[in-house]
Length: 237
Picture 1 (spheres, rainbow, N blue to C red):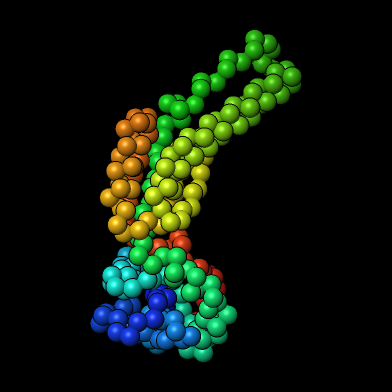
Picture 2 (cartoon, rainbow, N blue to C red):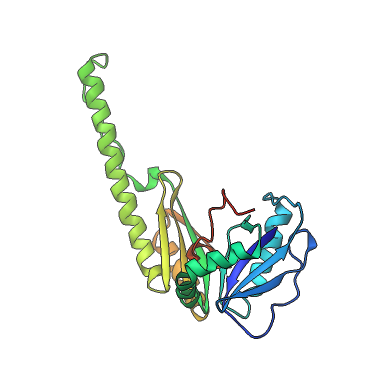
């Protein structure tokens, strides 16, 4: 069984000596001028324990110190080398384009926590009427739906106002809106030499929005900007 950590750009120098899953040594396969960081195993199970996740992340972060890296999702395995060769042959151009995109960049994450009571308008008072009537129930439900839609639009506008200045500092970005205590989570592909500028912008946005809590994490390998090698729930092992 072959465990895959990442896809990398081709370099003449080998990767640093690294102990991967179950302390097995990592190696770099070269297929179509694309490097695949792997380790080889017999009868192993790759459950997402803290140690296994750390091993995976440690290998990926060590590789990205001196080369462009597309991290594989945890648990990506293949039965034989020819299975990897087939996959790379199918996705060669996609992988090359992705490697070019992430070269010289890291991923920074931003989470925004918000109190709905601080951002949204208070609900309008219910009309005075017999609350046991069907009409009252329908009107109350309609009011709730309208308020939910108003809140959604407020959240969307607020998230956009935060996302746009951060996107201007990034090569790529992805945004997710949430209907719970997280207003948004986002990932940004930021050139290494702009990470300080990015952190400064996050601090500036936080000062402009005291009702929000902005959490910036990273730098990370570019997990959110790497093409999927295979479905993590249906690997080739």
